[in-house]
Length: 369
Image (cartoon, rainbow, N blue to C red; front, top):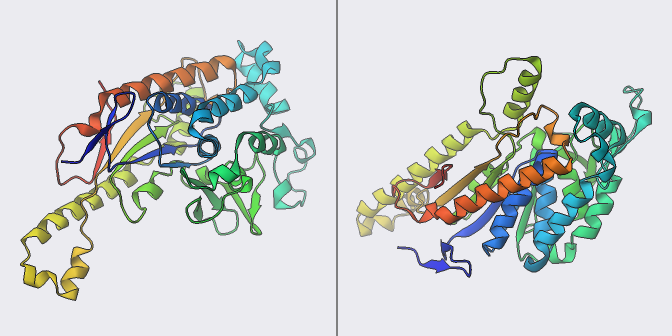
């Protein structure tokens, strides 16, 4: 029986568990992650690892790049900055609001590069081949993230980006290398809206165009550890049958950027086999266990347990396929509140402490009392 540690808020978490926060990409939908983190912060859960893509990399960088006592306030400050007050005149008319955002950008985040709008065939450097500039985001994050603190490795940070040359996904990891502002900017460089960011001469784009939910990097990490993983989903593929082109476009985007459950199920099966193999090795005679070929086979066994807490955003009435640029005060407030409520309910359930099949290495929890 693992040793249970109760933190000051009363939440019981096994002391052997690594606490991981996985943050999906999704633009303005990332306000949901603000609420989720507030619940984690309020419950005094000390994160060991934050991994994110796109807006998840931005939120994750702010969390990992500040001491515990100021993380939430810095995160809240970011969302107050991008809640552009000049747009609130159109807040009750989503079409006008979206048009305003696409035309003028978002304060503290991105601004239009009008010259590129009228000649898409114009030859430019890849760092300028975009409809918008993200210089404002760079300035914003430079004030909100302490990279000396981030690289002190008090909290591990990984951000996903995809090479614009090879098309391969890469996770930049503070445990393996020093992270800079460029790594976070690269992870959030969604083409063709935002420009690629070069790292050591190689251009990178938003990792979300390859894999928007970076949980596979956690599950494939080695050595494996017992883990409590909060996987925050910003795209919900479940809905009623679409009945208009508008609803079809919304559904298509939800499916495109949602988590790939089939891939997760395959990893889950692999970990189950590792657990079964580990139990089978208990029946091998001690004299045989010393043989090199047997030790090689035994090394494939595993008894670590990973609990995945699935937190998936609920739809807001009236939202459409442009919801990821909904930086209205109403949209940010509603999604943040939903995230806080759902994460609080999940944490209070302490579902990871309930009995489970010992052959299961990965347990997925999506329903909470």
